Image: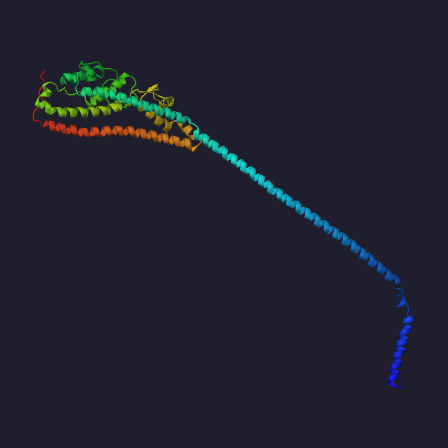
Length: 390
């Protein structure tokens, strides 16, 4: 048998055998001699149960995730609403706070305006005191003017004055005025006069008569001060030049010097009268001034002087407890500034009065030099004034 025939025969045999095997082959459950049907059924049931559980879990998970998404969305939405509400609430709080602050600022401003227009108690007291000082100063000027007129006439030796009659009469008139009120021990021992009380003895020669009292209470006090001024400046005025004493050549030459003397002495009297008048009773003291006088231990009277009122006003602001208490209680800068302005105004007033007195003092000093020059010239004059022939 050939090899080719043998190969074909084997192939035919395999095909026939495979065909018979397909026909006569056992079922799969028994492919390995074991019945695997129940196993496959169990597997199928397990797969079905697993598929059902998976689908159920998937559904639950999807539902849960969906719920979570929904709740979270609602939560975030609510939070957003809360934030929006919080922003609105903060805006309302800010608006309310702004309104409160604005109302507070308005009330503060109203209080400031009220303080700026309110009159302090010290304003009234200062005004009252200032007016009293001005009135007193004006009335003091009237007193000084009256004294100046009288003393000017005496210095010029006008009619009705002692020097009109002569120098001897003028000297005796001065002595008589002194003996009547101001007699001293030697004069009393000589029988010229009787001793007065201690306040009057020699008072026309005592500077304390003019400068010690803050106010001249009563006629005796002002007489003492005036008598001291006369004794100091011009106890006796020169006799009047009249008749041939002014018609002669020598008299004519002497007249300019007499007029210069009269002018100088009038200025000197004016300075003294200004000082004297400041202590004359020319004012009714205010209640605050009298309270200060009582604190200082002074005799409290209704009537006072310009000098006393000025001193009391200065002392009241420097050491007075009432003024200090009111100053501490002042609630605004305006009130304190007013007090400072009033104090500055008072200082200016005092400086102005001091300036006026300094003017007269300067002129008096200049005239004193002129008088000394006139006296030196008079010592070298050619002749003397003749005795008047009346």
